Length: 80
Length: 403
Image 1: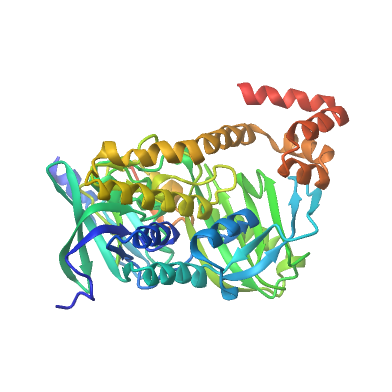
Image 2: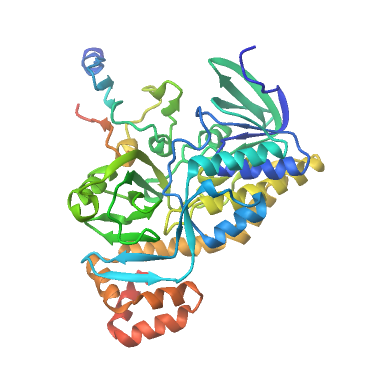
């Protein structure tokens, strides 16, 4: 279990993407509109003064944030 | 202490400095209550997440509650609409007189906050309420943050007017999460140098290609400037793509246009809440899903609810009972004055959502601009009767109302 989960936890940043677990946000597309915050049943996403924050411990990977995002800034992948 | 001028205790703390928050705060301040408004963004009124259109009726209510609207808060007056069916057929609606306006929210929201502050409310921007303070089953204030410093602001009642995100109500224990079926994705450009058909007419476009389960709008803000946007639901592509495609395919309007602003947001279109209060908490505006389900407009609802909340909270504090039971007077009043009719609009929205492009094109063949004018003036049954006489097969569409 441990090794396969470790493989998924890649955290890297290129100029556009910040990758955390299996949830991605393109901060250059994000308009900080908070639609994602409104549909997240776990309040795993919030808009703070530093931008959108994501708490992977609370996230249940339902993908609603990706569906509602008006600019397609969020990716939620479920490939195991 | 680096935390603005905010004090530690108020009668009421309002979270959110938009119209919902300002109308609530003004009513409370007018009644002599000590109220603070916390707005997390650095500026009241910006960025806008709104197409800025209001009816004349809404303007009347604004002026009754807040006073005469300054000219700079209104971008353009509107005297009608051009509605486009999916096949491009136009229905021209000319009321021959002003029926509404497009606001300048950057000015309007600030004006509302100024009026509230002049009535006695204290407003502080760039101040985020990060959580509620809960003690003995009551909401007793908020945890706030300004310039990186955290502190408590205590109050008898907290008003959650924090918009679509609605985190305060949820942290307090009221589930106001928007279900996907009850929220649209909205995207808009504010554009200049457009070739508008008529700078005093709003344009509405319907159809599965242009705006699935919603509509595309052009709301003029001047001779050649307008908000151009969509509200859509259940789409594979993001809302933005629908606006971009529309612009590409309509060079007659957009060939020389520029983009002044890019706006986005979630638009509640239903999910009205039976209960909007807790011990020491009242929810107002988008945070309480108080939006017209068919056109997505929330400005009117936020101000009506804000005024109601202000009055109910004033009564509750004066009799020293701000329990859920006491505050639930707000639920009763809101449902009676607004909720019941919005619920009917929600059913109508469900019906319209079932209409295919073919159905809409069929309706557009029969409906004329004058019919829609008469319909909005209350002559509903005679208009429907006329339409069914023109095309009896329209009755078949009513099946979709039932199924």
